[in-house]
Length: 117
Image 1: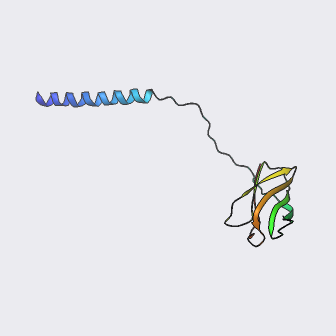
Image 2: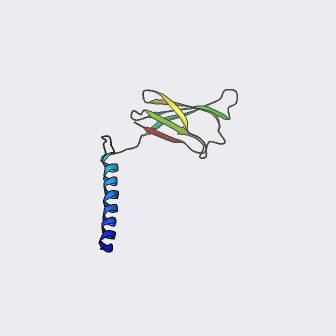
Image 3: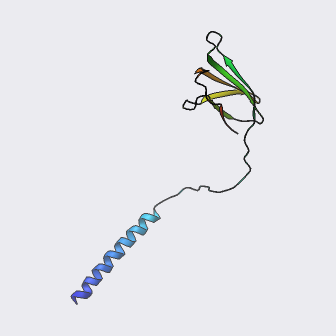
């Protein structure tokens, strides 16, 4: 009789925990969301007409860089020094200008354009 009482208590404790876990899970509300996967062709931009505009007073400094892209972009950045920061660029049509004040000709060791639609 003592053994069946022990078994009853164990089963009762398991049922209490199971009920509490179900009640907790039933209280969670998850908003509707979307997920998906797809593929498409991604091609790079062609950069042309690159012009380094030097500072009139100190021609060893690059004030701006202008260039053209072969397709429309909404976000374009330029980096001229491998360990340097990216500069924001502005556009008129497909022609872009990046203010690079502070970069010297001697320090410029790359021309890296990052563009996205």
